[in-house]
Image (cartoon, rainbow, N blue to C red):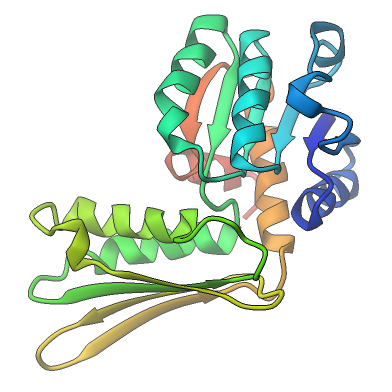
Length: 233
């Protein structure tokens, strides 16, 4: 496959490296080479099997619009743009493109989500979320923390958002820590995921791109993660 990675930051660069390790051909563009999605033209995208976006929220929306309008396939690991999600889904479906997005593509985090979904069904417990990321991460709470709260609320529909607080920290070059706490009258349960580096995230993104090839539609990574990992785990 030929993959186009948008973003030359730490994560984008590692995704490109992981894709090459898995035998794919890779092109990489940074924001200077793709200002306003100008590089995402029909001739360019005709050669690309899957685009992977690891930029920022504003750029990701521009990139998605350009790719999906041309019927291309794009994996989006950028967060902070989800107010545009209905528009992006509609565009993918209308133009025959494909969108696969997620707040976290780490294989370990996806299993963490599944464990939290089981914990969420406890009654008479109060829940809280704490997350830590590197100092340059712009969005707070993180997309992963918001997904964790969404999972908890899905099992506790009567719970107000304010009753599941999220505490965010931005420190140094931290790769990512998420802790979900369930506190009851008699005990306390914690589920914790700490990333040692970004390789798990990069691997998940490349596996997602492999799965997306040849497809059309729109999916959240959590919806299809078992299919994506079926040939890997």
